[in-house]
Length: 406
Image 1 (cartoon, rainbow, N blue to C red):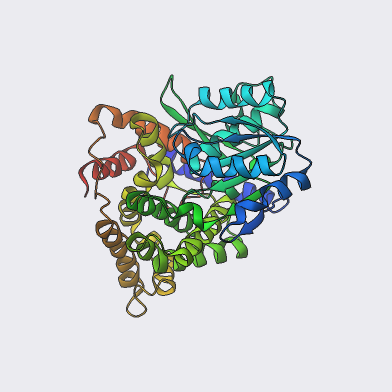
Image 2: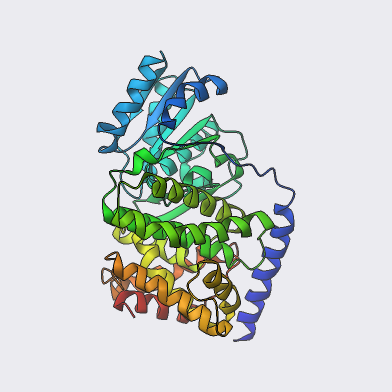
């Protein structure tokens, strides 16, 4: 490592140490949690409790025709006034978030229901941030703690078990002009309510079940490997999420109608989401976001492929913590620390294979790798307390392994 690299590392670790101390004094909260089959029927009660007079339902073009109809019927039966925005795409754009804000403003709404996977939830959260900072462009809100004002009430209703957006401080959106994904990160973005209704996940395609489940696993593992931000609660949430995902993910992949397994996966995703909200994510996410921006690669798929490759690259720096996760997940409970850690990574690869997730992503173009490296390092450093800080060369090498599935 060169002197300048040592200086950068010292700066990153100092920043993280100071920020970690500051985090302890921040007003953290979790959403009020409503769980169980049929729990979407609680929506009118929650809206009344929050004082919402007219709510904007934010969702995607497919979900609005199914679960969206059920929610609109619940609202109508309770006499709740609402408007709808149902054009959220995968990897939502800045333009989409702006349009949601305009729909919210023009219809005189005072609250949000975010229904779907991570895309509708992130888009709704970004629009809510814009609603309290109308003088700002959404891209100007990207970064740490730039919103700074309480948001209108948000009820987050996930229809997958993976993103954790129903409990996080983040909203990730894509600037289509540059194809760069950017994250708004502010405590005010944590939704006020989260409804985890397992019935909403019963119709998920197996591939979506697999990739969103591995997304949740990535959240939990990256949070657990955090260098400095961890708390007792985030460590416990990450451990419990990993344990539950190893028990339940392949079960619901093979048996999609397993309501109890679906409920457990929703809770695991929620815990993993809160774990990384407190502890942060890492290089897996930083690289995955470049794939989503450049190639519209689904975020869960990107994380699933990248996770074992990055963990292998970290090497002995993460062996003790991965060995502990191997024990918790009952992957390997005896042997050396290195053996248990390597078996944990091998089992992630095996899970991917059993669920039809590829080993690599050949969509990556050689000419894009320098830009991917630039974006990934800019996202990760100095904010993410990663166990291994990547140089440009090492990051590029990892991306080539992802490209080739090595």
